[in-house]
Length: 228
Image (cartoon, rainbow, N blue to C red; front, side):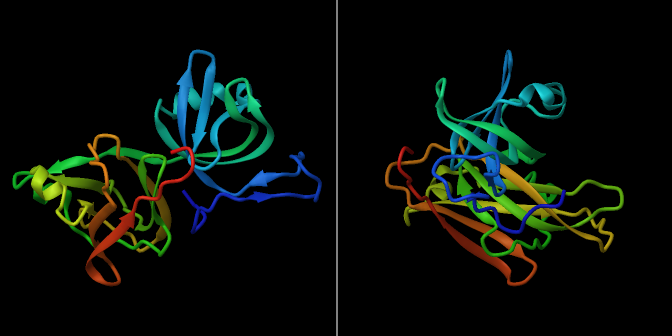
C-alpha cells in the first residue's frame, strides 16, 4: 500500500465559486467505515458523517473487503452539506484499507511475542483522531512471514494512568527477522475506545523503538475540536 507521507485533509478546487463543484476533491484523510443493511457510510475524522452517493458501484466489493468499524483512507468529491442526517453527501473517489487493531495488554508471559524491532515513522505521521491512534510507517517488506505491529498497555492501571496526566502505552514491532530490503509505506490505526480516559487527561505518552533515535517516548496531546 503506497500512501501519502502526511494526511492533512484539505479541499482542492478547480474554480473560485462558493459551494462545491464536480472539480472539488479532498486530499487523503482518515475515516471509519460503517456497514448498514443497505450499504455503508463513512465517518471522516475531519469532515464528519459522509454518505457516498456512488456506493452502489462498489458496495459488494466493500462488503467483501471491509468490516464494520474498519479504518480507511479516502478521497472524495463533496457534493452537499446536511444530507438526510449526514454531514455531507460525497462522491467517493478512492478508498484504501487500513489495518485496524485494538489495544492489547503486555505481560511478562507475552512480552517476547511482540518483539521490539526498530520502526521508522516520519514526523507528522503519528496522530490521534477519530478515537484512534493513526500511524504511517516505513516497512521493510517481509519475504514470507507477516510482520506484527501492536499497541500495548501495561496490565496495571497505575502504570497505564500516570500521575503526569498522560496515558502510557507502548508501540511494539516484530519483523520475525524476515526483511527483504524493499521499503514501502504502510498504515495502521489502533482503536482507543477500550481506554477509560479520566477527565483532564492531557494525552498519550507512547514508548517505541525508533530506527533513527533508539528508544524514545513521544508525547501525543489530545486536541479537543469543536463538536468533539
